[in-house]
Image 1 (cartoon, rainbow, N blue to C red):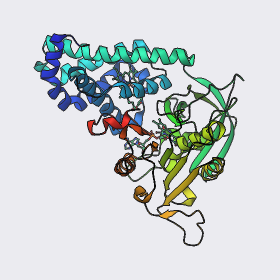
Image 2: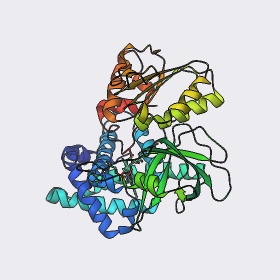
Image 3: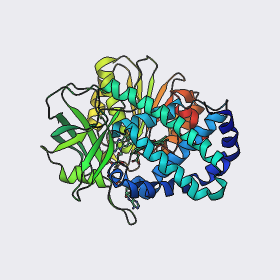
Length: 409
Ligand SMILES: Cc1cc2nc3c(=O)[nH]c(=O)nc-3n(C[C@H](O)[C@H](O)[C@H](O)COP(=O)(O)OP(=O)(O)OC[C@H]3O[C@@H](n4cnc5c(N)ncnc54)[C@H](O)[C@@H]3O)c2cc1C
Ligand code: HEM
C-alpha cells in the first residue's frame, strides 16, 4: 500500500503525470538505451518506432497509481498477469527493474521540471517500486513454476518441419528441442517468444502463439509475413523466419507463457478470430479434441478470402472430431463459383448468431474487430467477465477503463 503522505501527493499529481506520461516514457527509452545499449536487443524496435511500448508502459504506470489511490478501482490483477507473462517470455530479470526505475524517475524530472519537488519524486518512486515489486514477485513465481533461469531464458529448438499454410505468406514451423528433452506442456492459448538472430548481428524477440495442443516432443508456431507498405518497412522477424529459416535452422525459443488460456470448465465456448488470430483457436480446438470433445464450441472466423485463411484444413478436421462444434466463416472476397465452404461475404457480423448467454468467449484479431465482436456478444447477453482476448502487440486496450472489465477472467 502507498504511504498516506505519498497517496496525497499522487492524488494531487496523477493528472499532470497522466497528461505527460507518453512524453515521459518517450524520453525514458532513449535515455535508458544510451546507458544500456544491450537492452536494444531486448525491446521490440517496431513498438518503439510506432510509440506503442512507451504508451503501454506509461498507461500501465498511471493506471496502477490510480488503482492505488482509488478504493473502487477494478482489480489490477489481470494487467499484472499479462505483463508478468510477457516479461517471463523475454527473460526480464529483477536487477533490470533498478535500471528502468532509475531512468523513468530521471525522465519524470526532465519533463515536469520544477513541479517535481523531493516529495513528488519520492511519491512516484514509491508507486514505481510497489508496481515493480509485485511484478518481480509474480515473475519469480512463474520462473520457478516453469523451471526457467531468467539469466538463460532461451532453449534451442530445431525447425524439423515447415508447412506453407498460405503460399509465401503464412508458414507453420514445427520445432524440436536440440537437447532431446520433452517440450514443456503449454496451456492452449499460450505463446512463446522466439529470439531471432538477424543478419545485421542484432537480436529481436517476438511472440508466437503455439498453434496446436500440447505435444510431448514438438512445439508448433504459425507465422504470418508482415509485408512492407508505402510507409512502413517489412516486419523484421516474420521476414527473417519465412525467408531465412529453412528446416534444420536452430531457433532460440522461450518457455510457453500467457494468461489467456482455455479453462477446464464445461461452459460452451465461442472462438472469434480474424486472419492469423486463428492460431490460439487452432490450439484450443486441438486441446478440446484431445481432452474434452463433448464441450460445445462455436468457431467464428473472418479472413480476406479462402486463399488467405490459414489452418483451415487443420481446424476443420479438429472441429469435426468434436461432438458439438459449428463453424461460421466470413470472407471479404468470396469467389463466386469456387468457394464451397459456406462462407458469408463481407466482414464478420455476429448479430444473427445464436450464442448461449453462459458462453465463454476467446477473441483474437485486430482491436477494432474485437471491439465490434465484443459489443455484439454483450448485446446478446454474454457476460463481459466471460470475454477474454489476445492482442498480437502491446495491450493498449487493457489500460482503457472503458474496457478494463474485458480483461477480467
Ligand atoms: C501474445 C502474442 C502472440 C502472437 N502470436 C502470433 C502468431 O501466432 N502468429 C503471428 O504471425 N504473429 C503473432 N504475433 C505477432 C508477432 O509477435 C509479431 O509482432 C509479428 O510477427 C510482426 O513482427 P515482425 O518482427 O515481423 O514485424 P516488426 O518489425 O515488429 O514490425 C511490426 C510493424 O511495425 C511496422 N514498423 C516497424 N518499424 C517502423 C517504422 N520505423 N515506421 C513505421 N512502421 C514501422 C512494420 O511495418 C510492421 O507493420 C503475436 C504477438 C503477441 C504479442
Ligand atoms: C514497474 C516496471 C515495469 C512496468 C510497469 C512494465 C510494463 C510493461 C507493459 C505494460 C508491457 C506491455 C505488455 C503487453 O504486451 O501488453 C511491457 C512489455 C515489456 N517490458 Fe515491461 N514493464 C516494467 C519493467 C520492465 C523491465 C525492468 C524490463 C527490462 C529491462 C521490461 C521490458 C519489457 C519488454 C522487452 C516488453 C515487451 C514489449 C516490447 O518489447 O515492445 N519491462 N512492460
